[in-house]
Image (cartoon, rainbow, N blue to C red; front, top):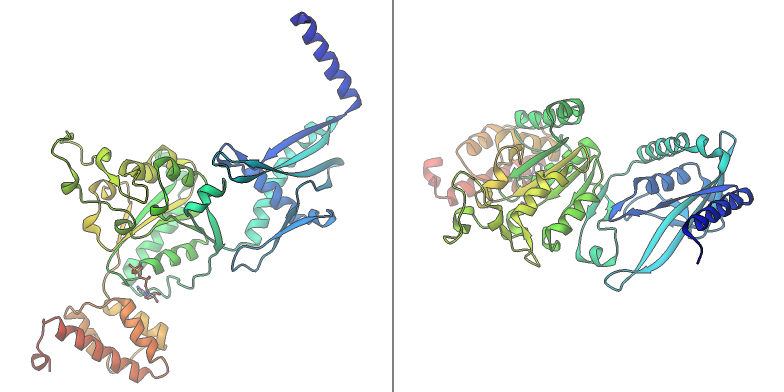
Amino acid sequence: LLPVEFAEALNRALRMLSSYFVPYVVFEIPEFEGTSINELYKNVQLHLTARDLCRSARKTVLCRVKNSNNTTSTLAGGEGVMETFEGAKIWWTHTVHGVKGSDGSNQDQRSYSMKVHRHDRDKIIPAYLDVIRENAYNFQHKNREMLLYSNNRSTFSMGRHLWQAVHFKHPATFDTLAMEPSQLQSIKADLDAFVAGKDYFQRVGRPWKRGYLLYGPAGSGKSSMIAAIANYLKWDVYDLELTQVRSNSELKQLLIQTTNKSVIVIEDIDCSVCLSHPRSRRSASTYTDPASSESPEQGRIEGDGGRITLSGLLNFTDGLWSCCGNERILIFTTNHIEKLDDALLRPGRMDLHIHMSYCTYAAFKTLVLNYLMLESHYLFPKVEKLLRSGVKVTPAQVSEVLIQSRDSSSEAMEKVVAFLEHRLFSSGKIHPETHA
Ligand SMILES: Nc1ncnc2c1ncn2[C@@H]1O[C@H](COP(=O)(O)OP(=O)(O)OP(=O)(O)O)[C@@H](O)[C@H]1O
């Protein structure tokens, strides 16, 4: 009923009056900003843990990621603690509200509120926030345990955390990988150059990310290579299960929730989704630009819900959204490179194609050294001859033979020779008598 000018003046006066009686300002730090995780919320959580401030709270929540040795404590909902920064008092409160999600499920909405005296405001922001970030970073790196994240349907229906984490403890390293030393060296060099290449990527205008395609027969060490890369960089791994993703927008949301310095893996890309070969996929009735090597509109991937398209996957690898973080390595693996769409293989998409081959003599020597601690043996030349004659065995098959006789290296070597001979003869390449 009041004239607008009068109502505004009254409002201003009331605010001034209330600030006189309530001399505090409150900053709300929600866990999510839309669907993205609010980094500041995570930083506050780590900062409070690092400073051991939760100790003074009456109620704390203790968490431990599966397989991990570390326990983190956070404030329970409604709990508060106080700390001092350069003479200014800061009151922290953690709030947890139960809300109904769009699908009717119950979800928790969490936020921290930071209350400070009005006259300390400029002292606190941004200096105190910078300290929080630094403490969080240091704490995370001091207590660094690598995590393996996975996605499934339930993570989509349960709330806004789309990835579930377990502690990642895979023993594979570049030293245990059996492959040509020169190939291994060039992969390590590529990783080193990538990690040190922040300024270079910036200068040439490329997002700071790298794509690897690992291809080769089953048992050639593709998964072991991924673990070795993650262990080498000490980065978390996101194991993306494409069959659990129903649409391009879900794929985008998953990407947004991955963190920097991480390895994102799509294993068996040719099996987890039905990617038909481009030539058979192109329909006669659909016009395609002959100059274009790809046809994303046709690249429909028949996942669980059949709604991810090839263009969605390509956007995931190098579209605008793929640049929403830094220092990411995207790894695709396949046993059948010939089944992959040309669009996925073209240069620039997967920067490095790594061929994980059948067992070579150099790879065999690494396996024998690792499994039997054997550097030489009179049967080595025989094994070399057999492997060079084209017998196709995977490192997984050889390691299986070695592990069975790990207590006796002579027996293990004899079994390897027998196994290779059997494979050679059964492949029909050489007759037993000719070989003898
Ligand atoms: N190149 C290798 N170096 C050392 N060990 C290997 C190698 N390849 C295979 N192995 C051994 O064989 C096991 C299976 O290998 P891995 O799962 O890495 O192969 P893969 O190529 O990923 O197979 P798949 O295509 O079936 O997933 C590993 O646990 C490891 O012990």
